[in-house]
Length: 120
Image (cartoon, rainbow, N blue to C red; front, side, top):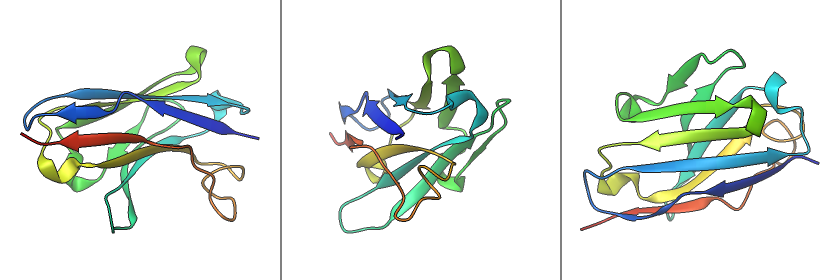
């Protein structure tokens, strides 16, 4: 059973930075694409970024140029570097694996997430 442990969230002022980490267990991490999603209170969970097995990335439009997704296959870890944070980035951030055990399962399997709050 794949499991995700997200960390690195916190309270940051507008314009600040955070780096999120997600450690994955119970999976052959290196063969799957990985992604980050976020969910603000009262809203649906939205796509943030995705990284392929060879490092190809794509981002939601509002994150381009501010967020960077990366991965370390030796550590079974995916990262999300977030710069120039805005109050509208406030949400719980979740990572996922694009596999039948996680994102494509019914229902999708998620970790507990990590809270990011951007406020002065």
